[in-house]
Amino acid sequence: MAKTYTTQEGDTVDMIAWNRFGVTHGATEAILRANPGLAAAGTKLPQGLTVTIPAFTPKKVTTAARIWS
Image 1 (cartoon, helix red, strand yellow):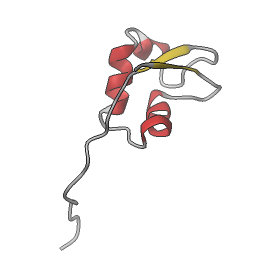
Image 2 (image 1 turned 180 degrees about the vertical axis):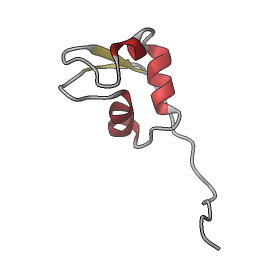
Image 3 (image 1 turned 90 degrees about the horizontal axis):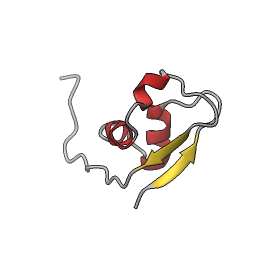
């Protein structure tokens, strides 16, 4: 079930995704798909904008990347 969120000063789509779902990968894209034209609002969203927060289930990461040997 979709919910709505009213942006505050300094909000970004990534920050909204992180605060709502605990991840940005996939969640940011889901929010942008649910809100056509939102990307045109810029990186920092204007205060008072109503954003639809879609239903989203983060995928579990089952392996970790090794960056050092």
